[in-house]
Length: 325
Image (tube, rainbow, N blue to C red; front, side, top):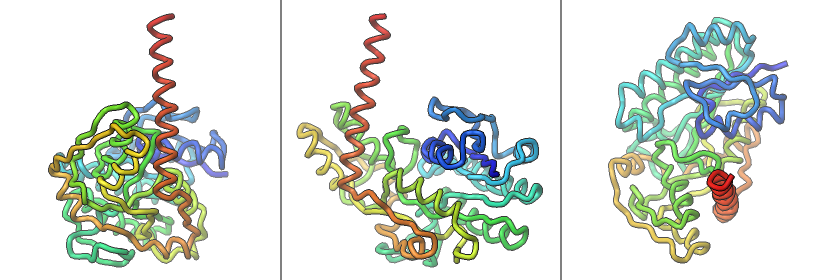
């Protein structure tokens, strides 16, 4: 019997992870926690929890007999650059608090997403490997390297199986953009579906690795269920599915919306993106615990548009019913 606590459950990953875990383990086995909740936290137990307060985390773990944790609570890359102290406090101290509380109450597994932000300008940009050097240039990247080091320490010192992977940009129709540097991709889709032109904050030729959210959720579940003996890394696994630039994505979306147009006005997020890899070598994740992305870029574009169009029509219908009860 597992009891899974999810921190940061209202974020992009958490909102999509909850139903996947409910399908596998039942809603009574999943506890959603965050400082605020969205409408998409599903029919599971919800607990208001601030990861910067270690005593509160300990109380939840003890009272709910938590066996495993998905620690997703974090301030993302673009917001972290605007508020670096707050980002370190939430991402760094929050992760330390979760590990300390988990060690105190003998939690089995902690799953933590890392990020391509751990890499810096001193790497080759193509097919970056898990053990390539990590010298990040952003506060978000610094906190993720810290998390990876803490994972090594708490696993070896306390016997908790802390594990995770470095995510690229994640594309999802389920949640709006949430201040990540790669979120331009989701924002571009949303503008196109709403028949609005888009102003992109990255240069048109900026390549970044990405993946579709079902593959990201599948990766999290797979590494959660992986046998400990099959893992050669803690959080250093790379995962990805494809790479594209803003202009390449625009061209694909334009096939569905010929009148859609994009302007490019790079801002501070351009410097963040330029410090990140263009593509990742994720063979170790495939070999060790069966990672296998199902969605190509073309599949992703098609599925995003189909579902965003469905959501737009549903919202239009709700507005009509509200205005004409």
